[in-house]
Length: 262
Image (cartoon, rainbow, N blue to C red):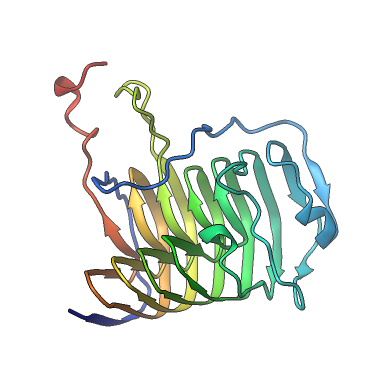
């Protein structure tokens, strides 16, 4: 069975979205940190590429990433758990053509926070053979995003598995563990984020594709928008596609406090 969906997005706004997912997805084990008082300045591409995954950085100028095969910042074994402040600067012309362990974007996996940044004219285009995550800002994120804009294109051909792709983030989730209680639970936030994108996703199994986020999981969105064109195809299963969010599940930990042991 084949399923294909086309969508044109114009000024899509989300005011508040919470969701839980019953499907198995990666859950990094590092929780987001509180905002620091000291920041490390970044003035070159080399400094950007060599960041410590646990520290706080502030971009001091615009950087053009043309001519570089970008390797995403943060991995499954070492996610970026620090802070990144773009200080209203721009990173332009990011290019990715390799699977990079299946997490692709400026950042691969993030459990920290990113703010005040523009990522423009990015081009993510690759073939994969495993579950795949892609977003212009980050592939997979459990932290907070504030005041971020992105523009660019994502093209993925996944030959064997599921694909999560969004103009901003492929998969966005709150931090949860097996022992998280209602009292401890907080959402991860995307606030004042905007995407202008073209997405063309082909996948063997499930596709989760959105103009802003491919899939949300216990996330809160406020003042967000996406504009552009999204196309997705699944060769065997379902396509979840949306102008803003491809797929969102609704709140197991929200409004059920009396049923959960705190």
